[in-house]
Amino acid sequence: MTTPNDPIDAEFTVDSDDSAGRLASAPSYAEVTGYTEDGRPTLDHVRDKIERRAATAVGSEELAGMIPEVVEAQEAFDKRQEAAKAKLEEIRKSMRADP
Image (cartoon, rainbow, N blue to C red):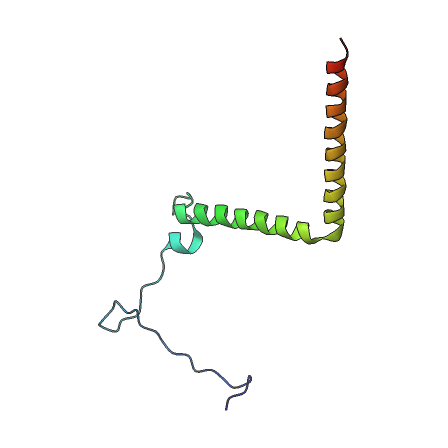
């Protein structure tokens, strides 16, 4: 049985496509940095950045919706919106009734 303090033996892995048993080549500059050598971002880098921002926005919105103060503020806002719609409808009816 091993304990968390026991050392772990490292081993090399071989790319499955390489039948000769050679180690896989190192990633390119663009793969590591997300930019080409002349400083332009790669499509994968831009796509990842957009997806990360979208996920952050969705997550932030979900988290904000869970905070009790935000829920109360949203409920108060909804009540004001309903009251405003009712008042507007009342004004419209009174304007139609007056010749």
